[in-house]
Each structure stands twice: as structure tokens, then as C-alpha cells.
Length: 527
Image 1 (cartoon, rainbow, N blue to C red):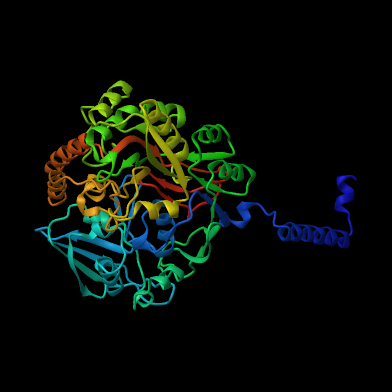
Image 2 (cartoon, one colour):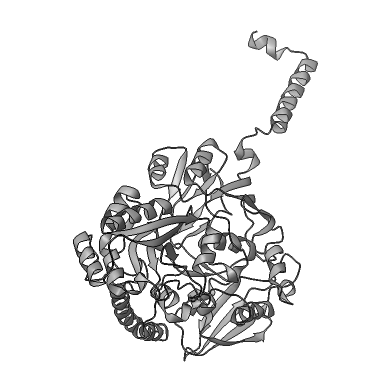
């Protein structure tokens, strides 16, 4: 048809064409295929695969990072961490120490509501701290707040911590705190708290099917920046291979802790991306220093020389980890590389076993979680094989995470631990967490996480002095001495620092993955 004929078309025909165009657009909209540029880039549902089912989501009872990540989305942190570990405002807008370091004051954000309609304020925050200081209430990280003598409400939006002594990293510890409703927590009923999760975070918990999924929906009354993800479904999938298969098939959008070979293949695939900063988590084999053969220092040192850590990181973990050369990862303030390294030396290991009077081929228990750490079961099996080579017969058993945590948190007189694979991560960048918080005699279970039951008065004294001064050079010198003691006493087999790895579909952007194992997906969008 010529252009002249088109120009001479009857007006009715033009109207019909226009109507057909409008109908076509309507059909495109109804079919849900309008381009993202028109619809916007928000995500309706984000599916995240995790390896463990949280034992709890009550903020002050959490002991592991994955539940902590989920809990923060529900309750909201008091302070946030930036990309480089710097503190930034959140529910607290400002904070600081007094001149003598004996008080610490927080100014809280006004106008914040909990999901039960009550106010976040100084009274709710004081109650949150007081619950953790109450010895009748289970709080595994109570030792973090040991320096606090009392908490005062200065005004409705100002709280003051009165300290027993100077505690240098208190500002960083405060960042671990959460907002819990006074209305929901008083009178205190832990069974109620485990069922009704009332917070001031960007999301609300709407469903938790144990062993299957945890479902969060956007908190429409959230005080802060509106999340771009409406619903987050955490799917509990213990096996890494299954999680990655589901990521590849589109059944998952994000997967925690992909296996090392999967990391390499995903990085080579344009359909996926992997964020993997070297974390603040160290992987080790803990040893009960108060019972059985692991009570003997020569035995513990022997086991350190028996393991080829470099081979584990290169052959088992495909280079997605680094061998430990100290009692903490190198990213921590106060880190010092140890002069005497536990290099792989099976002959020296055998000599130390002989010095410990250990009968060859005696059986000893080794336990490990499954799906909690990168290739945790495979690492445990490799350690088992190395120990067999020097005449230590380790019987390996594996457990799901909640069961495993229950075993490691028993008090000394009830603990059956001998060797146990564990990965301690520091939620802040200070040696205090990797020394006093994990190895001092103050944190033996059930008070804390010191499942090795390590006890050394000199070590305790050094770490206490280091946390009680704000002089950075003095603190570094004290931590170096403490690390040297700990390294020599060898309450654990020092293995490696692992990467914090998160794999996700490349159709998304905006995920925040931090080295201290924080993963924030709430502001992700389509590319």
C-alpha cells in the first residue's frame, strides 16, 4: 500500500488501529511482560538458600552468623557497619565515651515504632540490656556486656551505660545490639519471644517452618529507607550441591556458602556472580583442654603438626581460604603473625605423641557440623585421615547445626567433647573477640562459647588489660603476648580463615556482603 493511500484512509480505520494498539498494550500489561524499565526494578520475592536451620532468632540468644543476619532484618541493629568496618548510625544517631572512659552514652532515633505499635526509646533499650545482664536469663553473649555496671535513662531518647572499667571496644559491641519491644518482652517469657518476633527492622517474620523455610515480608511502617524486596524466603538446604543446583535452575536467587569448585564454575558463568571477601572467621578443630588426651599440651601440639593446612586450603578448598598463621585472622586489630609456625611435620607430631605417652591407634572422638562452614564435613574427613597417619584413630560423627550447638554448649562437667570442628567469626574487627571473648576462662559454657575450656590466668590477665585501655599501641603489645601464649598452649588445631561466599543470579544487583559475614539483601533490585 502506498503512502498516499495511507494518508487517504477513512477516520474510522484510523480509530480502529488506535484501539487495537491500546488493546495490545493492555494485553502486554496483563500478561506481566512489560519491561522492567516501565514497571520499576523492585523484587517481589527473593529466595535465599542457607545451610542451617537457626536454633533461635531471639537476638540476645543467637550464637551464629546466619541467624544473626536474619534477626537483624527483623529487629534492626542499634548501629551499622560500613564496607570498611566503620560504624554508622542506625537506631542510635550518636554515641561516645566520657573523658574518663567510665560512661558511654547513646542518643536514640526518634519516631521509630515496633511492629506491635509501641515506641522504640530509651526505656525499651534499657530493658534490652538489663535482660542480658540478668543471670536468670539465658544470654550466651552476656560476657560482651560484662563491663556494664548499670544502664540509666537520661531522657526518653538518651541512655547511659555506667561501666565497671574502661572497655575499649564497647562502641563496636553496641553495634551488635538489637531493638526489642518493651511491651513484647515484659513480663519476660522466652517461649513467647520464640514465637512472637516483634522488632523495628525492615521486615516482619510471618512464617517459620522448622527445617524448611523462614519467610519475611516488608515492614510497611519501617522508619528507614524502603526495602526494594517485598518478601524474602530463606530456604533451609543443608547440602551445598543442592543449593547450587537450585540456584542454577532458578529455584533460588541467592545461595550462602557455595562449595569451592562451584565458586570457580559460577565465577566463569555470566549468569551468576559470587561475592567472597576473606572473612573474620577462623576454622579450627577445638580440643577439650580439661579432659582425656586433649588435656595434654604435647598431644595438642602434636595434632597441630600432623595437619597439612596448606594442602587443605589448596586441594580441598580450591584456594578459597588461607592457612592461619596466628590465633586470629589478619584483618583483626591486634593481629600478630606467630614466629614459630605449626608447619606440617608428621615425624615431629609422632615424637610429641610419644612425649605425651599416647598409645598408638587409640580411638578419640571427632565431631563436625554439616553445611555450616565451607566444606566442613570434607575438612573434618581430611583431618581424620591426617590423624590416622600419625596413629590417632579419630571416629568422626556429623550433626545438624542445632544439635551440634547443643553439644558444644554443655558445661564442663557434662561435656563429652574431645575434638570438634568449629568456626568462630568476629562480628567486629578487634582482637578482643578472638581472645577474651573465646578463650578466657570467663566464657566457659554455658556462660559463653569457650568450648575448649581453656584456662590460663596469665592469658586472662593480658586480655583483660588489653580491653581496659584505649591506648592502641599498648593494646597491640598486650594482644601479641596473649597470642603467643595461646598459640603455644594450642587449645585448638589452627586451620584456616575462610572466605564469606555468597552466590547469586547476575540479573540482580545491590546485595551488600561484608567480611564480618553480614549479608544484606533488602536493597537488591533487577539490573
